[in-house]
Length: 252
Image (cartoon, rainbow, N blue to C red):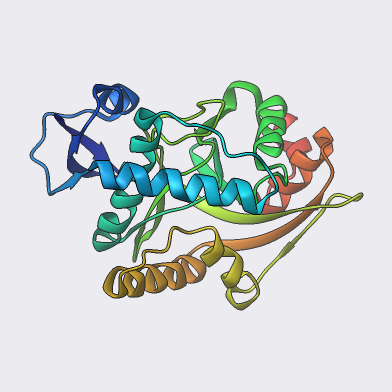
């Protein structure tokens, strides 16, 4: 058993883990601050993660992969963290968050649609002006003054993230299309998609908290739907549509 404290989305969390690799995984978020609550994993939690992984592979027609217990423990931690963080007005979201000039943009879509590829186009377009906040599972802290996007160690296969917080300007639902076009959405139009990309606890009370937070998220941030290909112009169209600023004028 190993014990350490991390700061996630401005909240200090004590983690009691079975494997030292879990502390190494969270190394960029370690803190000496006083924890607000504790997350603890067990061998039963790891077995549950293996069951979920195997079921998902079988449902997708793939042979189950034998993940290590150490890796599965990191999944168990984020699952428990997501439940606990809902009490801090914070949700764990599946999406890619990129920051440009101090503002964050979140792209969400089912796995395999091209979120990471689209974010990479933004980095090509903006160079050093852009960086990844998190490429897979950011935390979103929701308040009356807006939404902050935070990095986490659960940042996708390319490990793209920073331990930062950035004001979230917009959320964009990404869809493949031959033509690049972006359009605003109402909360009602995009709410099911937002809920589908949010970690939803099984327990009633935290689930109700998450539902409320997703509703506040949809009401508090500009929402868009983007039809795009994987060419560089897709990044220009999405940036101009969400920022309201023509890129050509900025370059001039």
